[in-house]
Image (cartoon, rainbow, N blue to C red; front, side, top):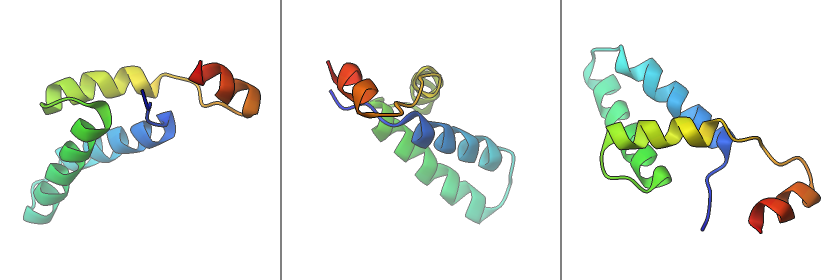
Length: 74
């Protein structure tokens, strides 16, 4: 199973948090897009589930070399 990069997940979570507090049409539209991306990235169907899954994924360490990557894939 493919796992999203923790860096990507952290970026999506940060963007979601930033947009959630804004009240403009543009921010709402972008929040909808980020929410969709979080759902797709975490293989979930609701933003609540996506946020919970993303928090877990974001805590993973980023592999730094081939050894870590091959171990993570096993």
